[in-house]
Image (tube, rainbow, N blue to C red):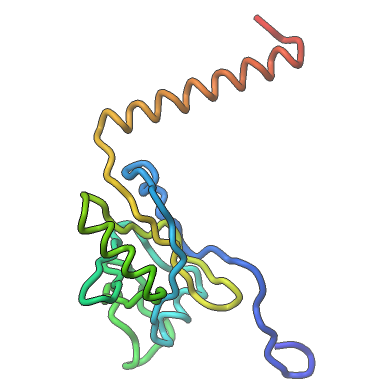
Length: 165
């Protein structure tokens, strides 16, 4: 609230939780921004910055997208109206996006993985990725490539500074 007692709308993007393992375990093919249907105590808990996307995934059932495995702990000041921490939550997407996801998840071994959860102008959003699971050798190759790139940039920095070995 501002000084006059009026509510001020939040601006910008405030990250609540990220799934850091997702980019390591999956190859990201496409991303979507989805709204999420929540109850009041879930939003209050999220405003405190409490959520975990570790085991979360999304499924498409009967033309609707559902987020499963997302953990939002119970609100500390809640009463009997508190929510179940791991309940299935509905994701809000446009029909054409849902139809595209249905086709893509059925055709191959692709899955829907939440990458991050954030407040966008006061509303809770989920960044959802259409992803393909990586094999162990793919993960090792990515790690080796990143290490090589890091070494190259480090060496270039040394040459610029005149500290070449």
